[in-house]
Structures are given as structure tokens and as C-alpha cells.
Length: 260
Image (tube, rainbow, N blue to C red; front, side):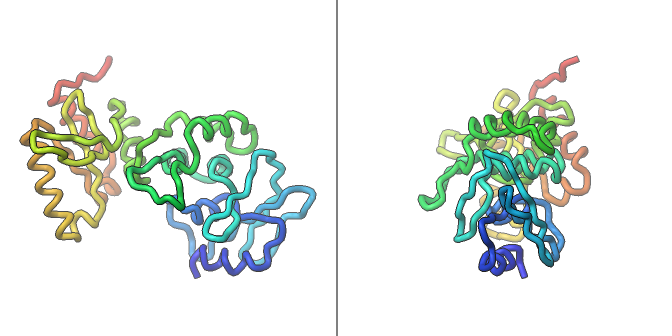
């Protein structure tokens, strides 16, 4: 059974409790590293209620006064900002930044029944600033790296690799135009040095229509004076440092100089 299926089954017996932590994150849904098939359901109550127990359930008694319940898809979940601080003690810094990026994202296309951002950046800052429990230091470190505009976990992880390689911070998902109109929205853009970095998951290879659109977009980028750097998912997984080096070479060719 999926996490959602198990959560829905458990919800029928829940009393004065909500899903929290990793479980709430998956149900929002936020993109996390893959979990084990038998991953426990994390369920929280407020004191003095006792943390729930049971097979496949990790119970928590949370006194946090800022914790709110949010109903999504019929399930009661911890609010997004609370999920962020709860995950600070279990995720890597990079994955926590990706969660923050997803929470503060206001996508170009959103559904009226699910308004975004799920957590405005100012609200996330306030929540993290008030948090002094487990993971507080990591939460503050991650918050400093959270940016509005990142549209996928993989884009965030690529951006963080570039920053760790001492490259300048790119602009996120910016529209680029030429004389004929819109070329496309570029994942990571360096307008000053005319470098356009695109992260390409496997669907860019397997979807023929997407492949054709990509070819045309990159031809137009080059014709407009941009240097495209295409980062394939397999290349990023295999050697992220080499991917950063490719971006570095493109930036240097565009006139960027590393500060001493």
C-alpha cells in the first residue's frame, strides 16, 4: 500500500490527531527522497494526550503552539511551515531547502482549489525564527537558501551544487525571448553572462514531442546569443561536480570572473 492508502485507512480510527513530519510532507505532497515501503506513519497529538501507538505508526506528542491542522484531500495534516521545521531534524540540508522551495513556490499555473504558495516566504521566515526546538539550526541554515521560483526538487539540488562550487546564484525560471517571441522559461539563468542552464529529466529523452521542442528551443537560444548548458538527470546523479564545472566553463566563456 502507498503512504496515502495507509494514511486513509488509519484516518478512520484517528482521534484528535493529525499527520506530521515525513508523512504530512508526502501527503501535501512535497517531493522527498524515496522512503522505504514500510515507512511508519507519523501521527501527532497535543499534550496531555498520549502519542498514539501501533504497528506502522510513529506517535508524537507535540506542544508547539504554532502547529496548525490543515485538511488536504480529506486528511488532517500539519501546516506547511510546521512540516518544514519538523523535517529539519530528519532531512539533509539540501533536501530541506528543496522542501522550502516547494512550499514558497507560486507556480505560473495553479489550481483555484489549491492556491499557492502553500506558505508565503515571509510566513516561513517568521515560523523558523520562532522555532527553538529540534533542528532549529538546520532550519535556519536551510531557510537562508530557500528561494521563490524553483519548480522542482531537482532544480533546487542543481542550484545548490552550483552555489557550493562558488558559482554565482542564478535567476530561477525566467522567460527568455527573441525577435520571434518567447523562447521558453529557463530553469537557471545567468542573464549577465548569457548562460542558460536546463535540468533535463528522463522525459526529455523519452517524450518525442518534448525532444522536438527542446531542439527548437536550444537552436533559438544559440541564435539569440545564449550558451545553453543541458544537465541530464543521469549526469547529475553520477557526477554533480562535473556538471558544475560545465556551467563554470560557460560562465567564464561569457566573461564571468571568479572573485579572488
